[in-house]
Length: 55
Image (tube, rainbow, N blue to C red; front, side):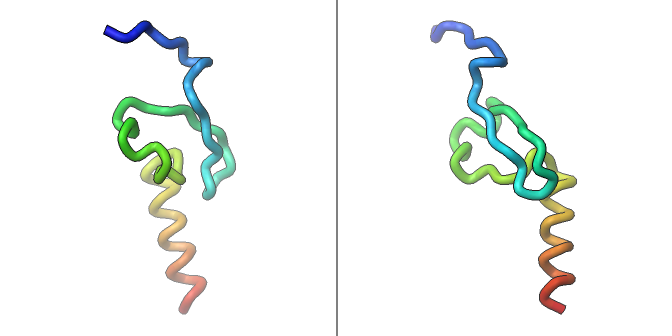
């Protein structure tokens, strides 16, 4: 079993929608390079903002 990591040692990114930092999650293990948003809410807001900007 791999050694435990502290939360402070995990990688972080900045959300492209709200600008807040967020940390790595186990469920993002395989797609961490593709993760852009910190939450479903930010992802929905980004899609709706992109849709209204093109109208």
